[in-house]
Length: 270
Ligand SMILES: C[S@@+](CC[C@H](N)C(=O)[O-])C[C@H]1O[C@@H](n2cnc3c(N)ncnc32)[C@H](O)[C@@H]1O
Image 1 (cartoon, rainbow, N blue to C red):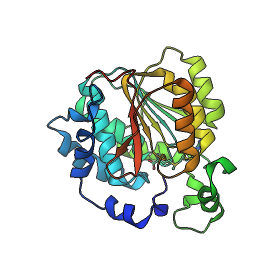
Image 2: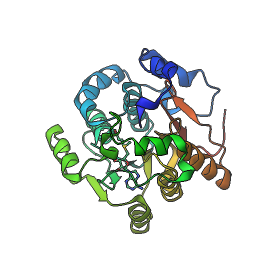
Image 3: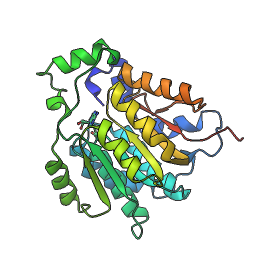
Image 4: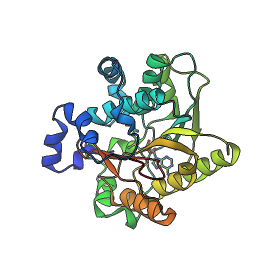
């Protein structure tokens, strides 16, 4: 998620108030049970406690982090079964936000947190990712380059240790998604996912994660697509996958079009 490329008007919206993050989904037509509509009373305090702690370890704007906290609250509140998965971890901020929120609400039975990353940055842009993505990767001196979004596994583990959440329920999968993700599914065919957070930027990275992990997402589980509004390849991978599978999921924006999500729901019920 590379915010510095946002058009100016979106940057302005990004600085807007939090109410937008919460109000937006309820203004959409009903799509059956909507996970974010059932916010617990602790919602405000969870956000206030957690986001400052993980802020240094994530590129995601605050509104996106707030949505993530709410998403965890929702799947716990609705008892949607499954683990939390992030593909594209960088310094671990989003992953930590999921775990810290869960610790606050349901510390007694932590779900597994599966974290996939090369821990050596993004793969090379392909033409399908679009000219903006190519320019971004070529511009190695840009302040938003972040060394090609590189953070080592050791750094992420150190961050988790400092936050007090490094333990055996956190599983790290180091390597390219193209290898690690299918291998995970092969070895864990019965796994269930409650939240699937896709943050790998490019077409191929998004495609391989959707193809392999979407089938494991529980009914009413949440799939967050961080780069949907940023990179052409990511949006294309999502549309291709939904089209090929004949899935009718609506793409919903987080707050301010900084990222998107969809609910795995076979049909609109109400
Ligand atoms: C934009 S960063 C993730 C940001 C992070 N979620 C946060 O909270 O700030 C993208 C990450 O995806 C990883 N990545 C992208 N494509 C990948 C692939 N095909 N295989 C493994 N890692 C990949 C990069 O190494 C990088 O850490």
